Image 1 (cartoon, rainbow, N blue to C red):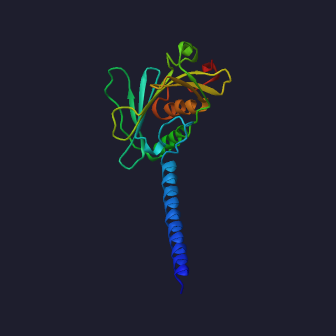
Image 2 (tube, rainbow, N blue to C red; image 1 turned 90 degrees about the vertical axis):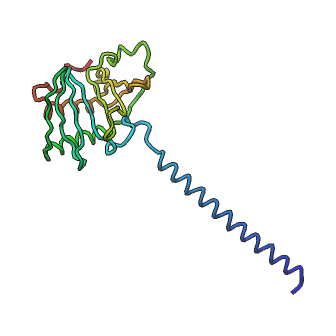
Image 3 (tube, rainbow, N blue to C red; image 1 turned 180 degrees about the vertical axis):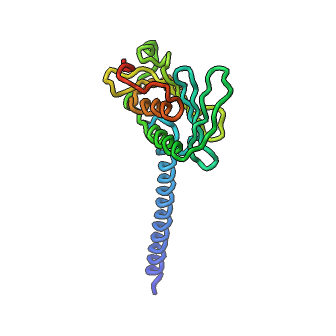
Amino acid sequence: MSPVRVRRGLVIVWLLLGALVLGIGVLELTDRLGASSAGGGADARMLLPVPIDQVGAIEIADAGRLHRFERDAAGAWFYHGVHAGAQTAHTHATDPAQAERIQRAFAAFGRTRVERDWAFDREGTAYGVTTPEIFVLVYRPSQSQPLAQYAVGHVAPDTVSRYVLVVGSRKVVAIPSYQIDNLVALIQAVGDPARPGPSSADRR
């Protein structure tokens, strides 16, 4: 075998090895980019910053009362009770039917999508969020500081959207009004039967 053929064979081998190494590098980079996008691919239009299964408690302040819902050690929701002013007595009850109802309501709330948003400015009073009718606080499990807070204002002129201030972001968003109606209905059914349900009279 001539030296020329040997050198040509070596060049071909090195080219094949180089192509193999390059291909492996491209595959590794693709895998890393895919993992990164999967980890950071949260939908920016979702109202809640995390999926509802990562939430450990939700508080709803309405009509001067703070209604707290929590998950037990098994992950089932229960109604913690009503806290009003200096009131210290509250209930702790876990009921399968009630837990299912709470779960359905919060699963729906966890799917809430932002329809529109505006910068919060001097016109914020028109949205009703500076004197909120309802206040919602969302907590991670075993955390005392809320993960997110929402001041709920008026129903929008289209009658199907509701203004919400995402506290700390200086942003007012519009979400489907029925999501807030669902929370009010939950309080009425589980926490405060005397509280009237939402009606067209509440819309502004």
